[in-house]
Length: 217
Image 1 (cartoon, helix red, strand yellow):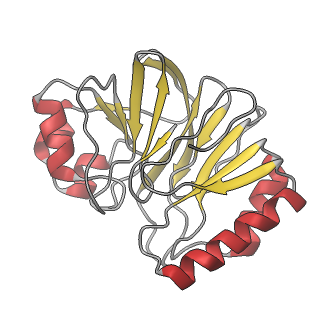
Image 2 (tube, helix red, strand yellow):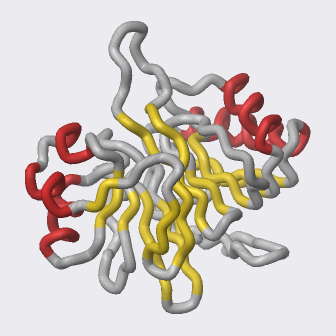
């Protein structure tokens, strides 16, 4: 797994690669040779509209929730993307993808957020987007926000206790300064005491080996 910016990660296996949540914070990833782009929801930090419109124009498959095109205001994206729904199973770019989730975590007392989809990849890697979805399967690698306007540390800890993942990869850190990153890292350091086997936050360009005995390089 390669970390791009903020919440964007790339899952690789041999020649196969898919990109998840390429947002508009930082340098966009290259989509050359990409077998699919998965979007959890339509907030700008997860969905870079010009990049996604370039992808559909280049016939690179883009997948996401039904309201994605409307949320980001792109008719081209709405017309050419593939809509996914919770409970579905797909083969995307050579990877098995089970769709979970449903709605972005609450950010306002009266106004619900957009749809949010989580993706269970190859039955073991859960990428949550901006919510804490319910999953029945065991999670080997959990990719989830370590910081967000909607996130409290206690909620992340409760989620990790429920899921009991092998490794937590903390993302969604693109708005933090050095002090904020230190706090996020302290929260991650606590997670092996809360049900995870290990926890790490990847810097931009870091690679995490998803095979047994994983390591950052």
